[in-house]
Image (cartoon, rainbow, N blue to C red):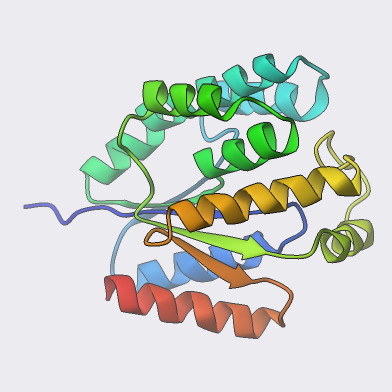
Length: 206
């Protein structure tokens, strides 16, 4: 019988430092002798990556944005996530529907009812096994972004108050899903964050 695959996601405002910790998680999973697929949202499939380009760079109506996010997610689930989990492969993903709750509902103002309708339609009853939410003050996140690459997408170019709303929505989502979402203080040194991530993985899955 095939071992059950696990779905682990990483969330947080832009600049929170997810990438380093995703790589560390991949390494841990392989050390535990599991196959692992790394992906991202929006994206993860050829169609999803095309939608990603539109979403990150083309201005559009809020509801169009939400629909395209969930369209990319539906394809991602069908082509990557579900097949991998069925084979016993673990999936590590940079963002999933928590991001839509935070960015489209919290940041942009999409009706929460509409968000839940989309979520229920696209992946009814399905959520990650574990989500790491990298919590960081938007001012600190902005400093990190400014010190990095300069070709920022239309989300990264948003004003500070947008990211304040996104952060608040993320924390609200975490309160609603305390058993699934582990809130991590992303302001600490990278090594401390990595240790916490690996400790949680060890407790949950080893």
